[in-house]
Length: 249
Image 1 (cartoon, rainbow, N blue to C red):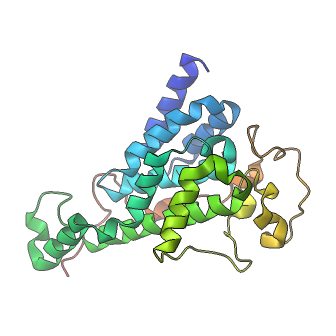
Image 2: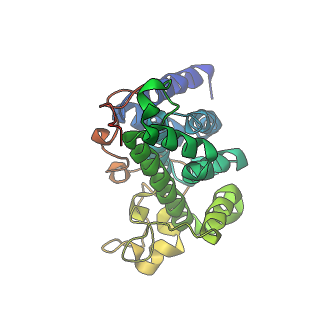
């Protein structure tokens, strides 16, 4: 790992996480860099952690979109660097709508004072939808990791602990008709998982392809680069403000 690679990764992260829409080319470049150079992963995880804690939902959604692409294209080789703090940030997004700050923001908006408050204080209907989208995306990613890396639970303790805690608290995780995550077939290395072998991916073979063998590093196949994130139309046009001013309820 050279300083030039670190600087290239940081530049790509800045491009995608500070944008107002999903930067597909930058995201895929990040996935390629992390697959070829797993020691770079802690840098990406740290930057994602920072943006997952933003008070605006747009950078949070951009970070989650990149995280989903990294999970699917890089697999265990990157996920193994997720620590307790990162897992806590994901859980906080699911529970955000239960927080006192969120409740006050919604009440202020509903009171008709939203237009008189500083930006980010009142939480309008558009912003509420974005936070809900973020919460659902976290549930999808955690379910995806659980199904794809069942055999690596010991190395992914923070991820599995967060998943089990949320399940115990009654949170509902999205699953497909086969009982596993609908995106399981797109995860690099998931073909080793019992969920995959049990037939959670109809029409696929349990035989590993050359591009996905090993479940660790290596270059991911292009097949895993399909619909890995919300369409850009789901995001506001700008990071700083919604695409249209929310109406007072």
